[in-house]
Length: 200
Image (cartoon, rainbow, N blue to C red; front, side, top):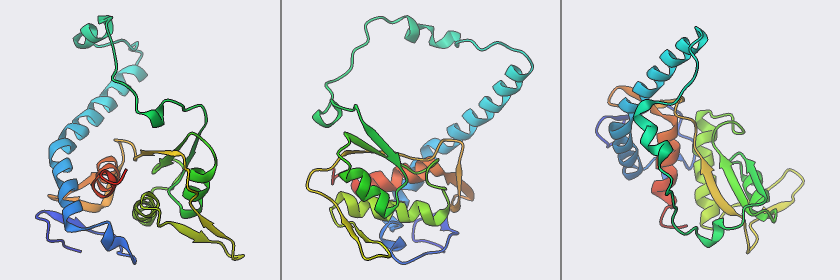
């Protein structure tokens, strides 16, 4: 599917609801991320592969000399943590599937890390449906009914959400920007941030 966003093409099937995530404005945002970060991402992946070959050949791992000043700086401080992040003793991790999202949010845990990679089987349909599910959950519109007729919906008090996009090494073959596959990380991050940052 060609889009109205210059240089962006969607190669994946468009299931019902996908159009609410793959909007022209959202794809334009992802394209900007891609154009700003993808070349450097690919360079770093290439450097990583070369370093791995050196390590495989017996080179011992060490720190870069260019980062010595960071390691030796002894006055590190951080800003004040948001209230929602002060207590993270119990955290649940799981894929962005409807039932899982609802159960994780309602579990009584301190946090829910929604995982778009390892626990998700990151194929096209799972990724975009996961974005739909999170968008609905954040707006408190997500519900689910299982095959036995049991209904699942969000409680008033829910866990704090964090989102784990796919790793830098994974590309998304269904979104082509300027003739190249985009980064799975940038797509996952970009779509989530674009649709939900102002809602959180």
